[in-house]
Amino acid sequence: MAAGYRSGAGIAAASSLALLAADAGAGAIAATPAADQPPADRAPANRAPADQRAPASASPAPIWQDLTALGVTCLVHTPRGVDTGALHDRLCAAVTTRAAKGAPVPVTATPLGGAALAPGRVTLLVQATVAPVNGADVIALTLRPFRNITGSGQFFAAAPRLVAAGDAAALDAAVAALLAETLPWQATHRGRGRPLPGAPPHA
Image 1 (tube, rainbow, N blue to C red):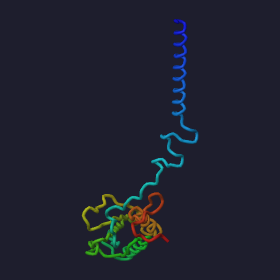
Image 2: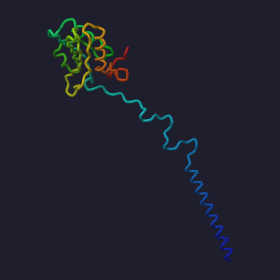
Image 3: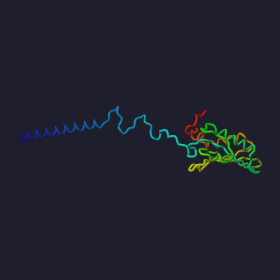
């Protein structure tokens, strides 16, 4: 009787071990993902990482929002006083022509006065100072946008340019550089302009 009991107990223990082993094997198989199914925490291969997504286009600065017109006002200082002659006209014409390229609004040269205060208007204040350096006249150029609206001030303007007074090509290049650092549609950021909403396509 004792021998039979021991034999039955051994068979029962062996059966229990076999059942436990079978359950463990089934659990391991269930935990292993199929070869053709990626793990849940693995991103699909065609999903772009967050740092590679194209950045959203930035909105223009407040000074350029809801723009309706762009004016150009020039002031030329010389050792003899304010000059309203040939250099003034040449500078204003160069800035007006260059600023109009790709502009979404009309661009006109206007004298300093009430027109600069019109709603929706930005005026480019262009200042040229002529002074002798080592016996030859040079022109220091600055350009700053102005708009008569609260909260549209611009703390920094384009870096000043210095050119020889008699070098027309250098003057044109300086004007182009100043406008590229000022106008959103001619900005040099990433090598291309950033058009304003509603701007016509570039030619």
